[in-house]
Amino acid sequence: MLDSTVGPQLRRARAAVFTVFALNGFLLALWVVHIPVITDRTGVAKSTLGTFILMLAGAGIIGMRIAGPLADRFGSRTLVGAAAAITALTVIGPGLATGPIALAVALACFGFGNGALDVSMNTQAVHVERAYGRPIMSAFHALFSGGGFLGSVLGAAAQRADWDVRLTLGVSSVVCLVLTAALLPLLLRDTAASDLADAPADAAPAPQPQSTTGWGRVPERTRKVMALALIAFVLLLCEGAAADWSALQVREHLDADESTAALAFAAFSFTMTAGRLATDRIAGTFGRVAVVRYGSLICALGLGLVIVSPWIPLTLLGWALCGIGLSGGIPQIFTTAGNLGSSTAATDMSRVFSLGYLGLLAGPAVIGWLTALVPLTTALAAPLVLLLLCSWQAGVVAPPKSRVSA
Image (tube, rainbow, N blue to C red; front, side, top):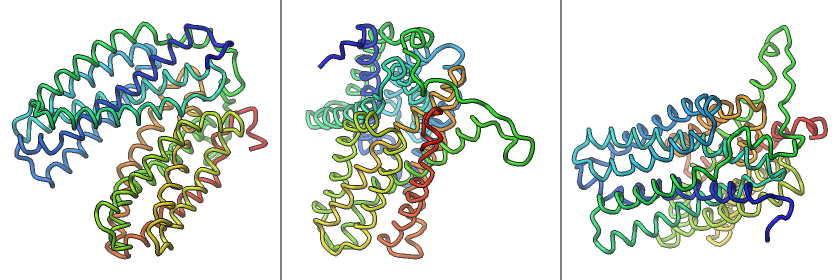
């Protein structure tokens, strides 16, 4: 159902950003589903591949930090076009690699483009959401998940049809480049987004009071960026831990077979996607603080069930609750970061993104380290405690006007 208060230019921009998010998820999924084929072609061992994936992530963080100031200077629309083109072109690289060095370089380039696209497309999404005057950020992230699902299905189908990986990635690259060129004129110029908006309260830059001693010397916006980045770190740490350890936890703790254990990640993924589709309406009704606060508590409840449950159905319910709880928090963090100040929105988001991304990488590693001391199920108590702290600090996502009541 179309909103009669929203003009056609905004609707086209929203649809274009939806497509960009889906393209990003699609391209990432293509790489993931072809990992076994690519490692066979390049002769890379699993241990070496782990190092290369960390290299991809590190290049992504560099791309994020560079893209933020560039998007603020040249506009997020320009950066979306450039970053999407880089990502679409470099996805071919891993398929063309024939040795470890070539694969490492290809993954670094792909990671850089993906990181830059993450920041620039979320900045564009903030501009569109601001012009809409109501929460729509979570739906963009749901489309990213949908694009990942489509990429995994089409990638698997191409492999079943015995397509060469270079052909699959090459065709996908060309299609994504053509789509990017078609979408670019539909995106909003940052100045146009300001003109179309009705200046909602949370779009106004927060005041920047200065103190004279200690921690208070740090400007208010800088402190808020750091607080948002820490919450993003924790939420994505929990997401990474759930994604990588859920199936193994069910198998080890409840002695389940592999097919049953796989249902844990399926439950988490399904409720994560469904939750993102519903979060915008929830945020519009109850506010961002409620989404982060009660979402963190729901995820903590889910982890609590996982830790104490002696039954598979109850454990699967716990992982499903984790997906619901985590689904809406990160979009609220990015919306808040993008609305702290109109002139530095992308830079603020790049800082929040990069630390949050470190959490996504650190989550599986932290749980892995803890399993050297305690059982895997017990180790999940660590993210549970961090989620309680996130719930306590959820007021940081409140719009400036309502901060007192948060």
